[in-house]
View 1 (tube, rainbow, N blue to C red):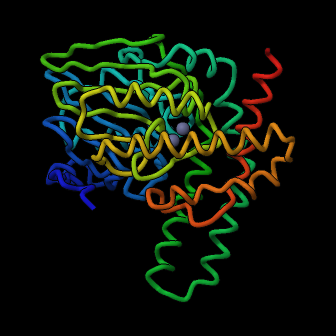
View 2 (cartoon, rainbow, N blue to C red):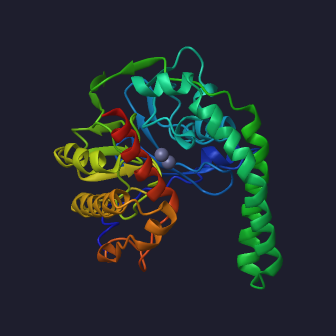
Length: 343
Ligand SMILES: [Zn+2]
Ligand SMILES: [Zn+2]
């Protein structure tokens, strides 16, 4: 695997962190991808869910995405102080999903929060409120699952890991309570460019894909692009959302950019641009097979058993046999039904 050929600079716990922030352990690992540009990946101390990108400019900091709760985002803000004293002046959300936008509220009026105009409309219409309510419904079951695994686990190292996970998830359930969905205060439709010192930051809406609010954050000089959940390279990412046929086509807009490194919304940065074509082929196959079953009026549960994407297993480790996640198949049926309904 040539995935990690560039040099990672880890600033997990600098001397500054150890002294000034001794009370609160560092919650994010920073991986430098270009001078002053970092991917911030949660280290498990607190539920962050998403990875973010930090761009340190001449006079300020530009943050790509917030974490899943206000508390995780406050920890991100304090961890960024181990990199620089400059203030965060800009935040951009790569899409409205709660794991990328539920920390927006920690920023005051001096911070410009940017997003696609649909993101503002949708958050004001209540999408995040609904998502948080669903999370409150799902969490008790998920916590019980971890407790069951913990009770059954014999291996001490694995048991300790599960214990940490349970602690972080119980805290997360509490941390969710203070969330007040906060929309961007500056919006755009197709693209927007921001110049800070000698840094050029291009925000591009590639069209509908993982959501109808996707934003790519492109640094042309540094050849770095942040993709949110629109493209997750070696992983397929979350597929129970979006518009899969348009997604495959709109990935061409990402392909057209001259970049070397991707900072995606989950996991660590990666290279290998050819993965875009693998993902397009995967999405098209998923869409076409599901559409054929939909058109034959095969029920969703049955279609989920029949869709077979094993042709792509060489590129995606999570594919190991026929059948596919029912929620994704249901989403494709929903998109197809909405289109028929509107024609
Ligand atoms: Zn998402
Ligand atoms: Zn996400």
